[in-house]
Length: 442
Image (cartoon, rainbow, N blue to C red):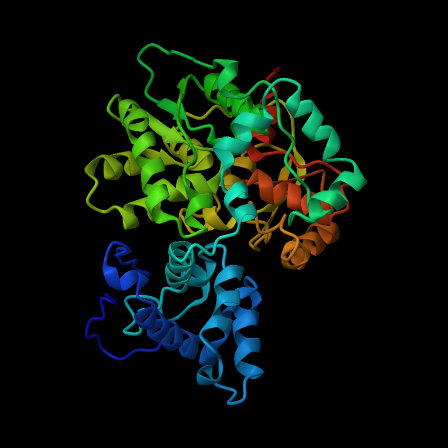
């Protein structure tokens, strides 16, 4: 189950971190005795290290439990007390990718995020996931309902009313959390398509739930940028959520169902030589990393996974081929940029910063800190204030540097940062900034 192999004893190392297949169909995966044994083993290693204390709130919570126990060690923490550690993990992956010296191939083989995923799966199997959390993770259902004509206007109006937000707080949604606005004309309804004869590049845009139902303008901006660069473009139709919100609840079986519904649509494009690009890093990461680790024997998934790209990963590929237009009309000035966690862990570097700085008269101040939003963590009554605290270093850095505009590859993170800045200015997606630099009219 743990896939422990004999290796030479070493502290840390310079080898590339490796990820093991998530053996979630193994009966031992949901065996709580075996899970607790592994949980305590990992917690003991974390207790002796504590390098990750500045990341999410899982680690301060874990260390407080240990330090406030009778023994001051892991054995002084009861099994149920670890639930709070699991609840604070939103699978950002930064501990695994940027901090932990004991990840595989180290002999201790610690993978904290996937251990937390196991804990979430046990919670889901024991039917302990709240109705609120299930609703928040049902992004397709919420989007389809709230984007209906008139309903979107009504819900957007009430979400701005303080009295309504106080009432909503009784259902677990923090009154000060910035909630997404819904649109009555979705990205898919824009019917965007661009056919370029003998085009070297073909892109199918996976709109994602958020940018389909909440900010379709970013999809239009990306389409315009691609069209400007003579790229053939299609929009993936009749797809559903990537499954990340359900994964964060430990509902792996439903994640698999959602994947199976998406694969035929995606494969239809990959078979024709299209890249599949999504404007939200989490959705790209799901198909690049998480789903292949959960379903390693699905050959269609592996093929689709290889076709998935981040928008700026794709633009950088074009730039390397000397195919990206440098015909920029407008400078962008000083841009404060939060590097989204789920983009960082894809390990292709700061390509958003690189492409933005191709624009003359543009300086990008990149901050590699988590926003603490996670999509749902930042809106919940019990965790909103914690998420604001996590975002404070970004707010401080942005304020001190000054900016003409600020941005993040993750739109939800950007709006959360907007909230921490006191809503003094709206963020602009990096793709929208590129469109502005080109001087493309909508």
